[in-house]
Length: 109
Image (cartoon, rainbow, N blue to C red; front, side, top):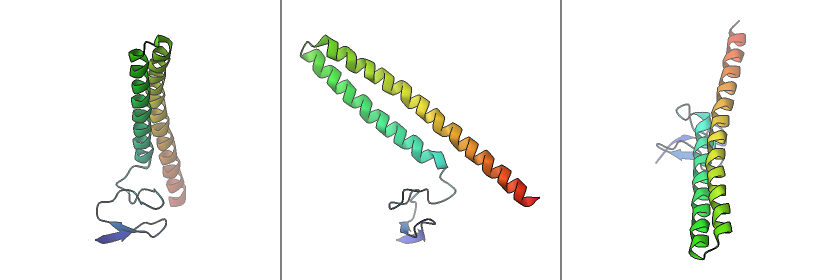
């Protein structure tokens, strides 16, 4: 059942949708702007972590210690980068929100 339309592309949205399936923008004020970036960061980080873990396990099984070590190092780096990217997204969102508040204050004057 369609209850609203995307404010960006006018795609019909079903009740409860937080993101437009066509343009991938949040559908309303209840979705923080950075939430999508954070979710994607976590998903990609999880996929990379799982891939490196599988490769490291495979290398250990085959007795390829150098390859196993390299994949474990890549897993650690992925986890570190994931946190840094998440922090950067949150910082950017705060900056944009502050700029919007400043613009709104200027408009009210």
